[in-house]
Length: 445
Ligand SMILES: C/C=C/C(=O)SCCNC(=O)CCNC(=O)[C@H](O)C(C)(C)COP(=O)(O)OP(=O)(O)OC[C@H]1O[C@@H](n2cnc3c(N)ncnc32)[C@H](O)[C@@H]1OP(=O)(O)O
Ligand SMILES: NC(=O)C1=CN([C@@H]2O[C@H](COP(=O)(O)OP(=O)(O)OC[C@H]3O[C@@H](n4cnc5c(N)ncnc54)[C@H](OP(=O)(O)O)[C@@H]3O)[C@@H](O)[C@H]2O)C=CC1
Image (cartoon, rainbow, N blue to C red; front, side, top):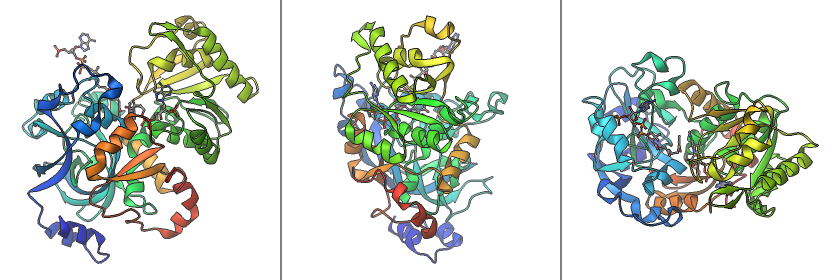
């Protein structure tokens, strides 16, 4: 592994040098174990502790198949899907690996008693499998997390609709929270040259998801002037949704839970900010009963901030706790676009407000190949910036996932895999200097 790292850090290394480097038989990776899926039985979701279930293991290098690449991972990031994996909710991810393993001789590799997790990476291609021509050893890359087979016509217009669509490192094995990762070569995209490894690894999953959910015609198709209600506006998804709204000439109404988070939104350029904690919204009177008076109070506050206008698009992901309010505050003909249900997936809302006011709910999930590429292009051009607040070592991944689970983090949390320190891998100092304040906006807060 040291030779790999030396080659990555040497400015003189050629593609042939990387191709000739011997690959290690094993590498270090963050895993969950199949024989531990019941370890949190009887414990509340909040108290399930990722530090107990996430392990740093030495694992054998997987065989490289056609159309695939092995990548030396310099940095990765923690996504909420890794939190779900680590607490075995809503179901253990081993079922996904078993199902994938039944697909073909090659996919059998994924069905193991351990699951190497992680759905982001920035690193360097080490080897490519047969049929890969666009990438070669030594290429500096990021990887998006859409894994598809594309053998069915269902996914040929929109690759997210492939019946064998999977999220790499969640529904497949050999993810990015590791020293080496296995990806399909179609997941690879150029690493933005003005960012360090950990900065480049941070946006991938959430940036692409926010792009489809909010900007793409497959999602809400946001346009100039739209009032966009963004839950968790300084969090993983929300910090990119806020940037897309601002960059696209829309008006983000940012919901956060502390003055510090409100300040981050202000620093990004948002003006309309609601501190849900300070304003004490209680959309549920008890576990089973919502309080429409609170929806109205929330809507009134939004009208104060918008000069009397209602919401064109809600960027939803908290789910059960907020969904009733989200449907209510949307304007006639407006859109609620949802990609998650962090607080519970059995939503309740008053359907009269949906049909009588001709609103629509759009389900959105990650991004297709093209959308992921377009989202990465915006990062590479310095139009949208990483929202990395803090990095951890690979050994500390459990703590990093704990922070995200407990909502103790800001923006995105990074993990250094092979990178010995932060700040390495920058190739375009000029573009970096132009955007340095925005790149550092979330750091150390
Ligand atoms: C990029 C980052 C993203 C995120 O962070 S997202 C957040 C994390 N992700 C999650 O929380 C999602 C985790 N996944 C799940 O919870 C489950 O994955 C799903 C609920 C999405 C799906 O459940 P399942 O059990 O895997 O699949 P089924 O489709 O429910 O299959 C069960 C059986 O139901 C049959 N079935 C499906 N549709 C129909 C239909 N329309 N009519 C009749 N039957 C149907 C199937 O065939 C199958 O059957 P048979 O068990 O016999 O094989
Ligand atoms: N389908 C897909 O493709 C994707 C789905 N997801 C899912 O989206 C969800 C959010 O992911 P991500 O943004 O990365 O996570 P983060 O934890 O980084 O951010 C979410 C933010 O939402 C806010 N929030 C959390 N719970 C509530 C609640 N009950 N009511 C109101 N606001 C709440 C919090 O902000 P604050 O406290 O400031 O209000 C929190 O910081 C996760 O469930 C994740 O699995 C994520 C990416 C892709």
